[in-house]
Length: 254
Image (spheres, rainbow, N blue to C red):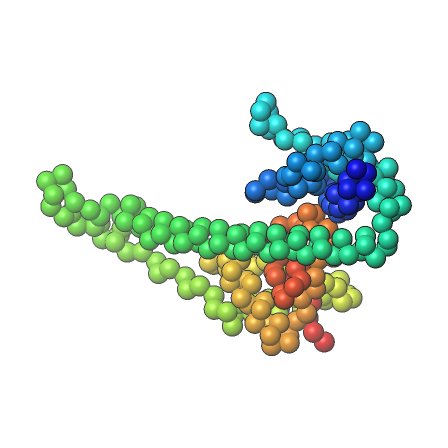
């Protein structure tokens, strides 16, 4: 029985080591877990809990909706090292990294779709607001009422920045970033994006990403990957998928 449980336990302990923030004990259709949702995995999970190889690190929800998240313990890490070959541990971590990268890619795509949706709603509201403020419309009898001469006049909407213009602005911001430090250094993409918020209208995340891709294709800047754990990535909506890497920093090419 122990031999049948060991592969399940080692796989779960590798997942726990890769996610110290905590995972569900058993996977569901929508969320990953340390163990597959199979009857054969229950004895393995019970053994891990009984021997203190995993522990609860956080909870959320209440009552029947309470969910517990588990991470590995020092004893669990020792068990993983003692019962696995170094190559097996590395292979497990590489496989888990691929899974996390796919999950992060989907999160970034969802964030981009949400940003585009918000931009669309902002444009619709901007088109309606002048009519609300001008007082133009119809009388109670259904006859059109002339707009007030002053209210009928409105300043033209500012033209959105083009990709080419945004590329030049980003290039200038990166040059200023490097010169302010006195030494070459990488600029985090969220910091770079916020530096463009003074534009009117401010560029969207999608426009920002388009300009970064263009500058990268023109070999005018470097895009550097995030090297920490993916769950610790700050402001993931501003990060950019480039090939198989998550770019989080930018710097000018010499």
